[in-house]
Image 1: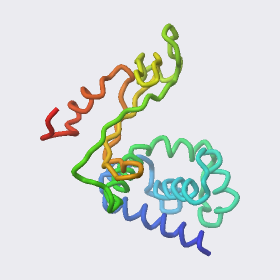
Image 2: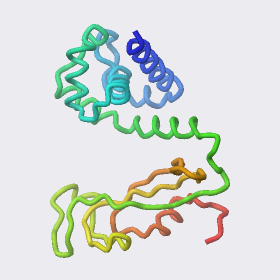
Image 3: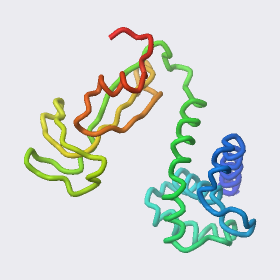
Image 4: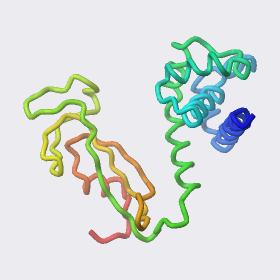
Length: 197
């Protein structure tokens, strides 16, 4: 009974997010004009519910769980290929959802006046003389001084609120090419407006 309630809460929250962000409906990332057809709200609710409460991270696992255990709740579930394609089409919505979740759930012990900045390499290919074969359009060669390694890939930049004695709480997240300098990215994004360098 608790899982059913969590599913209803997740779906209602996703519908509220769609009502709050009218641009998602105006863009029409998919064809939602037939009420009996599988809607974007259903795809997002399935992804969030199964990922969070059932701890499945792969789309194939999420789809299989939904097909076997949630079929009564989602009778118009399309094939795996169509479900996967739908999630790939509506991926920009997940960025807005993430920002909303972060901004509305800042913990009480977050020090809003103290920001921490860090970056982490996401390696797609190691080595000084290697050539990347994965995601060539968004990766390039960089050097990580803390790990003392050359790599092909991207960097994830994180601006976070300090929390004493525990992990900082994220405020902003950004991906850049591996060769980008942290300070240059932060200045370009105006993350620290009014802060002295």
